[in-house]
Image (cartoon, rainbow, N blue to C red; front, side):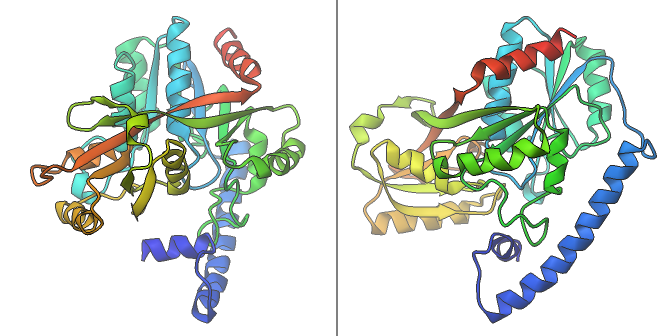
Length: 353
């Protein structure tokens, strides 16, 4: 059901029945939009309390459902701030299924592995987590993951990531579209980072022409998500992708934007013959992986490639049934292609206030 509703919201379903459901979802999105607007007015009017902390707060978020590439951007920002000598912590809400409620969420696991020196606190109550982090670590700055809709907490800088391949969907709000807030809410942003600019090059001018009138003085940077290397999930051994050129592989992912993942694999010279894409944050079962392997055997494929976000959920399974199959993860990195200097100058200006 969740997958079907998402396909309706992204207009991947058509037909008479889908059309009727879309009309119903549009009514719900109008109601949702009204509620969001009322809440925003209450926060702007101080009817609802906004908490200010005794340290700087930078939010990295988006205005749409997942898939904009926030996690690599947060990693890049955190590394920059740490290298500048700042004591920081990352607050993330985290997304966990019922099957994995005792495990750390995917993004937090990824960030912990790459930023071992940075405290990462997971939980819905980020105000309480922020106060705890300030008490325990004597911070200069808090980095708020997916914080654009966390209106209760005052931010000194709001960074909004926009996916160049699908910036605003059909421009409807949830559940008829993928917008979490009205587009007019982008006026709260201080910096826009248009991600995956190389894959959505045709949309770049249109995106900028839309966001500039909403917030004329906001900085607008562009970035790409590029593959860095492949590595084996059982021992982290890096694999030379050039030696696998033209090899048929299977892709396995449960992320918001599998199309970009697939494109990056193809850029490495590999051939994704089989593709298994699940809903974002899907909690894999051993039976899922066994079915994937059966399909691979039928196509004489012995290599499965997944994302680093999927890694924690796959590693939680017993993988002793692989029998010669290799599961590789793709490490990706973010690179600015426009206004990198302005982006980091804005970051430092907040820290030096």
